[in-house]
Image (cartoon, rainbow, N blue to C red; front, side):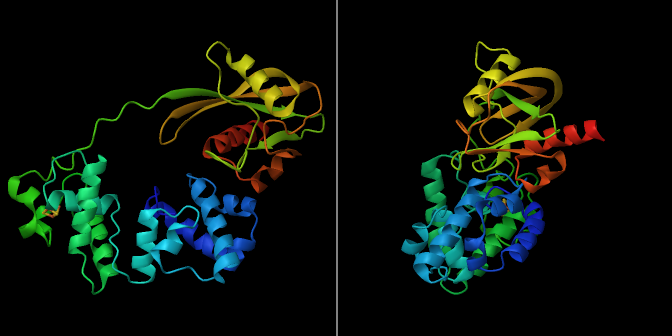
Length: 320
Ligand code: SF4
């Protein structure tokens, strides 16, 4: 949970998650939908899918015990070098450095590394430095300590060098570079995509929702039918095309319901939602995993992305 999401945001999710899935077995037995629902709004849903898949593998192949070796951990879904090191260090007190963003900043400043910190050669250098200085006694305390130092003292802006316990050792502080380092490569502006969503009602007032395929961004979540506007399409043309491709039906696109903005890691979107009615055809799951007609008050039973949740809020406001 803590990969990509800040501690304050994670805490309530963590407690609810452990209450709902108190053991590896409970998590393995749950449906992916339950897990995604518990994760809803925290983003980066691949983490939830991987955690669920890893729990199933741990139960199936490892007798329900989280492994304590690098090779076994790294073979589990969603576990890369950072997570493997974090588990080995924090759960098993093994001597593996865990270099998160905070630790990276501290080490970069301590050694006054002046190349871009997000360049792989500099990241390797920082990781090697961490591996050299981590003690064999209480390595987990060391990892906690360095992360905490970055979070509370060696902050991205205005580091509190005069209160820093390692100030005497810090090359950036000695050279007056603490405000300059770490250097990041210039990021390109995020591309922007125009997305569309069809809020299709039947004559009983039920809404048509579709489930995304399990893989990829937001995989396994539910959404309103629709997708990205093509280069030569109007929003309404793009919407009609997507609905035909996903469900094999024709729709009549009526009034705009809402336009919501949302940013992902690599792009931003504006999601334009329209009130729609089915014109012809019977829905079939062609370009989606599954579809369902649901009453508006049942939408809460399904996991949606944050952008789709905003559309649902607009829908509720309209129906209030
Ligand atoms: Fe960070 Fe300043 Fe401490 Fe150096 S002295 S580690 S820059 S807080």
